[in-house]
Image (cartoon, rainbow, N blue to C red; front, side, top):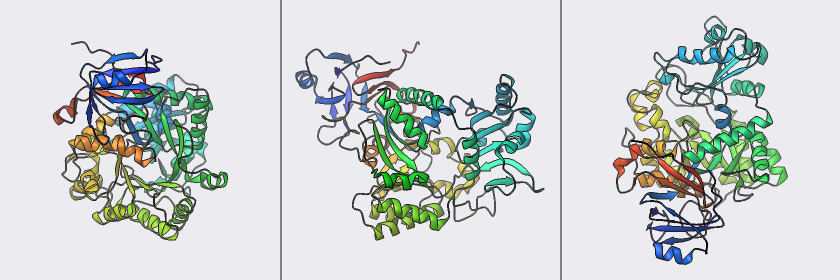
Length: 521
């Protein structure tokens, strides 16, 4: 929905500004895509331009629209065009969906599935080559795990990809045969071989944006591919970009980025260049996150670093020297230590006062890690939805880590108490700030639980800080963008309503872009 509003007064609401001074207001006026007044209805009406539209919010709670601080946004849209395996509850159901897709496509055409997670399956186990051979014998198949760090392929795919036992990051069984499970670098081979067409990326952006608006999201920090940046640029030129993008470039583009003189923060109000996304380790679900003690369900395996340590530190140093922000993927405690060591050395060599470097995920930090992050001004970019998906006493975390480490992972409370800036994103697993808020507020362990206000700040005010945009958005104050999320309940005064919280309306640049259809009783 796009009503074409250029000047509007939103009234009869409970506006939580999250800014300094007055924290609660009754009305807000927007003009030219920005907030021009916040306050009582009389104050706002007096400041609004003539001829404005009036939108009655019927007493609903209003906050700044959400920012998802860790996405693979266009990929999320592309994944929705593949065989969706996210809601399957068994291996058999996943295979059935892949088989059905193959029956409607020519022999030899790629079948691509996305989003499977064995942690949600009855008798959960990874998909393997034999499964996919049986279900799709005449098509090459790749099925990506939800984390993006693991994929499964069949024999036809193995032949087309040209991988064998000597290929790094492939899984081998006891007989020396490829199981069909690919990890980390081997996943990249499959991704490149099945990369989408240019038109598909534009469609993926459209689908992802529609989904974002339905969840109250108008800003994202995207860790995409170079082709995604091109898609964003073209969408902005055509005036089709309906989400504010902060784009972190892949490490492979670092030299070119430095050569062209690109700096963090360059761009427009819709599309800004962020920093450099660097991988340190893998993921807990794929058992590739680098941890100091072996996985509880895979004795002897302590995960892996996805890049040579010396090369990793050189990348970090080069980006810091160039004045670029770093967004380092580090999940396990060993991975986090390596990331912080590299950042410390880089900053000692080339000090910067306001670098706002980030550690992405930070699932198993120690208290010493958090002290270092606080001292060095390093931001914690975390995903509370992971706790909702895999936390508790029976989730995937306890299978991988055992009960003691599970109780210490994703410690949002400890992050804030240590004085570390906390920002929230989803990694698109699943994409939903409301679910993330619930996951943090009702987290199973004390080290994880935070308040509704703290969680919402991590998706709004502090997320804007992490992208150097705190002067442009993140609070409902005059001069900032008129991006709003209208909620079904007030999670500040009634925390028990978080479980049923919904986004009723989303406003982007003063225009209504989403409105929930009226529910029938």
